[in-house]
Image 1 (cartoon, each protein chain N blue to C red):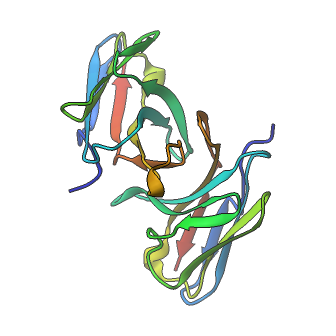
Image 2 (tube, each protein chain N blue to C red):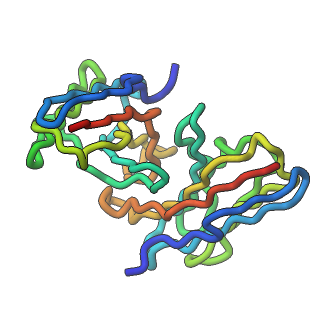
Length: 114
Length: 116
């Protein structure tokens, strides 16, 4: 089992540019989550999907953020345009309903917007 | 008020010490509770679940008090390798009243450093 795979591991971009973060969940998992982690705010849930359908996007900070899950094996989180305050580690996680031990995080994408 | 609040820490203890972390949660409808561990520049990983009856895993003991909405983690005989950030995590009931382990809310985390 390859686990949750995120790419890229690191991203440095200039303010105003579009950034796309990618996630491949564990095969068979029916929930996918996007979290953001900063020193000031800790881990914040941005959005989550169940069976590829967005369920709750109330954590998405602004319209500049959007997320999609076109199929069960792929999700993207896009920031357009990016701003320095978006700098953070973005984690993707997946889980299987009814099994808390199936809540697995990817290694994260460390985003720096300069 | 934050949904999940933890001891601010940091905790700096010698090897062999016993250390306890506390956490409170605000949503009385919360279904399940966990402690996660996060090493520096790594992803969070499940340490253990927390049950009302209390549960133990080696040197680690977790307790839940639903009436007080309070969760604790006790680490005995601390090792250098226990140095990490410990995250208190609460599962929220999903919209519509369904029960699932779908959405987890994380506390800010407590940093533990165990020194020789």
